[in-house]
Amino acid sequence: MDKIRLAIVGCGVMGNRHLNGLIALHKSGFSNIELVSACDPIIENAEALAKRAEEFLGNKVKPVPKLSDLKSLGVNAIDITTVPWTHHNIAIEAMQMGINVMVEKPMGLTMKACKLMLDEAKRSGCVFSVAENFHYDPINIIGKELIKSGAIGNPRLMIQNNIGGGDSIIVTPWRHYKKGGGPLLDVGVHYSYIVEYLMGEVDSVHAHTRLHEKVRRNAQGEIKADAEDAVYATLLFKNGAVGQYVEDHAGHGQGLWQRSIYGSKGSINLPGDRSGKPINLIIDGKGMTKDDEMLELITDYHLNNITAKLFGGERICHYDLPFAEIDSGLLAIEYYDYAEAIQNGRTPSVDPIMATRSVALIYAMLESAKIGHAVSMDEIMNEEITGYQDEINDLCQW
Ligand SMILES: NC(=O)c1ccc[n+]([C@@H]2O[C@H](COP(=O)([O-])OP(=O)(O)OC[C@H]3O[C@@H](n4cnc5c(N)ncnc54)[C@H](O)[C@@H]3O)[C@@H](O)[C@H]2O)c1
Image (cartoon, rainbow, N blue to C red; front, side, top):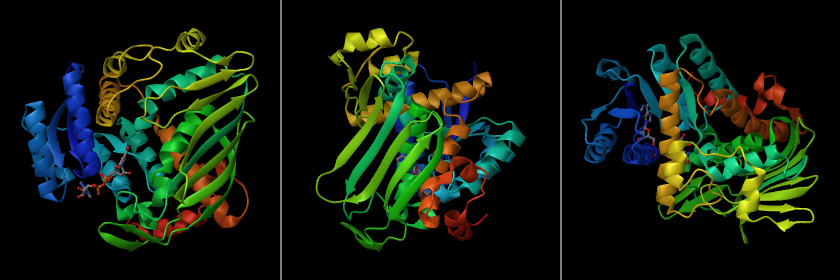
């Protein structure tokens, strides 16, 4: 089958990490993609990425400043790795040209942006995928299989807690501005995706948010943050389970990570994403479960060929790899899935509706905190409650 002719659009930090993913895909022997172009209005960024790509992938890669330059190069798929407030305009313009799209998380800056993209994907018939790399982490796949197998009985409670960060700038200043979505969206959308991936759909949310650290610092200086940096929420799942969600990017003192699910027969604790550490499964009367016992519970668990190759086997329970290799490996799998979806005309593994819901869950928390009572996911998905997002939509050019 012909390889997908791809352009990376946005050649900053994540564009370059995605290139590492393409290099890992190339080395894996599973490559179904040819990188044809690198696109960025800052042409030096596009040139630098193209140069590195040529060195490692061995084919010519054309740097261009505009999306409209891609059609004449025979590009049939793009990967958008630009800042969040640009995602919808780029995705829609590409799909209007008949070009398939994969876009970095968060899929869109607000529900309005997500809906516009979903509408254009439907109208154009283009494949539309979201680069939610945590979806492909074998440890999350095992977690989902364990819950599905009934190993812990009926899930009753999920705890998703993450505390740390103090007053430091998270990677780049834009992550602290409402116009950029703020850290709760930019970081939290990974967690909200995994919450529904593991537990099924959330029904309603009641949350409190805070902007604790109004001044953020790094070695380059200080910035004034205007986006909330902490949320404390209770979730109600459609299956009746309850969730506790804490995402606090202003935590001082002891940091905290916890992703636990308690059921009617036992519990599982999942490690940090991309760590490869083992899942801790405790079943009543049996204590901690060993690897081979865990595998006996999940007979359906088989990683696909490329994941098995990059992470060390079809039925691994954990992995021990350098972070750079884990990161590029997951991005390689994500690319492989995207290209296969285009080649086979199937829905990508990260379904855009699920990706929209991951944005909706974060806004459910922010909207709930603004109006002071619980909100349903339907009210957010249907854009019936938008008070918090209205301000962000007003800041955006549509
Ligand atoms: N999945 C992950 O693990 C992960 C990690 C970091 C960032 N991200 C996501 O990746 C995206 C990019 O973040 P980043 O940190 O790389 O940002 P960045 O600021 O480093 O890079 C963005 C690049 O996009 C370019 N750009 C801006 N407008 C453009 C346009 N219209 N067309 C083409 N290029 C354009 C900029 O010139 C810049 O080179 C964000 O959505 C972020 O949330 C994901």
